[in-house]
Length: 166
Image (cartoon, rainbow, N blue to C red; front, side, top):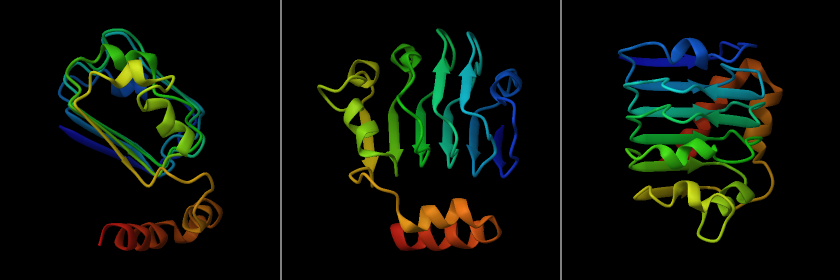
């Protein structure tokens, strides 16, 4: 089962509910679906999840992954969650993780995950660590517009993706 959450503006962490879905294999949480600043993947949560994408969660500062959460996760993407401080400690326990893709995140976030960085020990077991557009300190104008003018969010996002990936 695949689930994509978009523009829900939830105040409460959706993870305690979502992690109990027994057949969930792909989860995308994005575009202001969660307005809070902390998410937690609980012990034993998401027993079959293979792919997780967190994108455009503008308030997310802390993401926790408890031991034995996400036991089958193979692909993790963190895309433009610019306030997220670090990769969760629990990522180091996800031995099935094949790829982490970090897109449009602050330079400091990327540096923490590189060899010699504070979070490298959490991700050094992952065979593929991909960083796209993480070598800047500021915020792209297009992202400022995305957050400041909600009426044109989708137009901006489509334009942004077209320019970046075509």
